[in-house]
Amino acid sequence: MDYSNNYSTTSYGAQGGASGGGFLPGSQTDSPSTGKRSYGKDTLRPVTIKQLVDAHHPHPDAEFFMIDDSECTQVTFVGQVRGISTQTTNITYKLDDGTGIMEVKVWIDAEAFADPADPSNQKAKPVEQGYARVWGRLKAFNNKRHVGANIIRPIQDHNEIQYHLLEATAVHLHFTRGPLESLQQANQQKALGNGAQSNGYNQGFDGAAAGTNAGGTKGLAPGASRAARQVYTTLMNAPQTHEGLHLQDIATRANMEMAEAHKGADELMQMGLTYTTVDDQTWAILDV
Image (tube, rainbow, N blue to C red; front, side):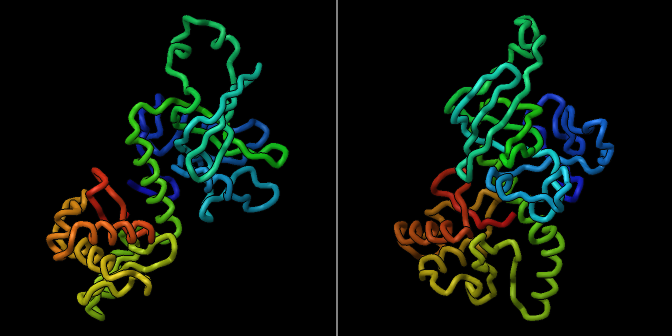
C-alpha cells in the first residue's frame, strides 16, 4: 500500500469504493460557499476512534482535522453498534471500537427512504450489538464531534475487524516514524557500520525498542524476562513465513518448555512487540 499524502487503500466492499486514490461518493466536493479544497487533498484514512477524539484543527478557522500532524479528510473505521437513534432527518449510530465511542450520523433522503422498491433500501442495515464499518468525514458541532457518514454497512466477516486495526496501525507508523522503506535503508546502513541488525518499526507503542543485534535482544526493555528474550530472539532469527511461528516451534527452537514460551510470548505482546496471527498459538514480530 502507498501511504503517502494521497495514499490509496482497499475498498472493503464499498460500492463506489475507496480504491483509486481513496475517494468516496460525495467526498470530492464541499459546500459551494467554501471553494477552498482541491481533489488532491481529499483522502481516505483508516483510523481508530481514539485518533478521531484526539484529532485537532491546525488553526481556529480550519474546516479539516489533523491526525499525526497530517491533514485528514475522509476516514474509515470499524466498531460495535452500541445504540441506534432514528430521527426525522437522520439516523444516529453510536459505535465503540474499544478505543473510544463516536456518534455516526447518516442523513435520510426522504424520497428514497419512503420507497420500499428502491434498491438502496434492500441492503442490510447495521443492528445493535453488531459490527459495522463507516466511511465519512469527522465533524464538530457545538464542541461535540461526530462522523457524517457517506456509507455505513454491517460487518459480515469478523476478520475485517482485525485487518482494519492492523492497517490503521500501519498508517499511524508511516506518519509518525516515516516510510518503511526509508527506515529499512537507514537501518541497513547502520548495520554495515556497527554490525548490528535493527528495525525502527520494532519499537512498541510503549516506547520500548525491540531492535536486536547478533548477540541477542539488545533493544528490549531492561525489565524483560529471560523467557521473553528467548522468544523474541527466536522470532527475529528463525526462518518463517508472514504468519510467524507456532508456539511449539518457538519452544523447540529455543529449547524451552511450552508454558515458559507462552509466558514469554504473552509478555512481548503486552509490550507491543508481538501479535498472534492465524490462531492464538502462532506469533509474529510486530513489524509493519
